Length: 415
Image (cartoon, rainbow, N blue to C red; front, side, top):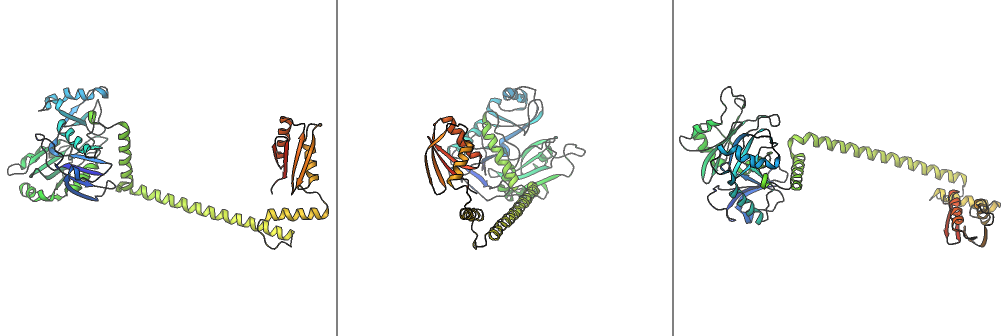
């Protein structure tokens, strides 16, 4: 997964292919493998590209959506948000919170459509089509689907200036870190008795370059989080702003969800017990199969040994056992031949079974060839039905019978 974000943000300047981007890569969506800053043309190749929008690129609006068809939802958003927007709604791209739909009160993300489409086009032209668009900070979704989370303050550098982005269940605020600006962060801080955000549940995070200024101005200690780690955190969220006219095809979305699910299952700490359980189950199954195979080999070896012992007890002159059933049949054939008893390999036995299997009294043999326990008989009359019935009757009796035109080949069955 390749995660990237523009190094500087401005909707007034045209996006250029030579503009710098901060990027990070992760093989499993949980740990970083490499990161850097470069132009679009120098980005490493990856099949899953996630674009992270800077905090200033996205505005957030709380809105109650009427119950309308999904096809009309984008047009309805223009009317619902008209009084909340400073720009013309036609110039903005909207996206709903994860799982948000018509008939609910949801957070709506808005960003400059021309600027966003320009970046998407630049990346696609460079061979890095974007599969997901996520915000770098977002309001916490306090609902049954998304349990309430901590208030997050993130001190970072944007276009060479330090900023503080603050997010809670009340919204998102971006404040420049300069003398006299500390009070602006209180817009999203929980107030005593606030039921939407728990007291004391606040995270103070900062890029290393902005930490010192943030701590000096706010009098608060910040936990250091490097930008690549922050980008990975954003990519792990459920947000995807690629909606409405920027949405992917249903096939691409299914593939995207499948890849994300596989990455989480393979590497996420929450799935570690399930992974260990599956590994243990496979190990038990493998041990069980090997034990069953070993037992079957023991039983087969015991049966083969018993056959060999039976052969040598019945025919003591056999000293080397290679194929007990075949050797026993040969020895039995020698005894029958020596004592004058007919065996299945004799011509008389074949003629006898032919006589018993023939249903038509008028059927006769016009030619007989016999050699090496195999007989070839030319049968008349050569009725197709009678010959087929004769062949099937012989096969059911345990003989190897094969017909070709009017000639019938007959052999004793193999042991």
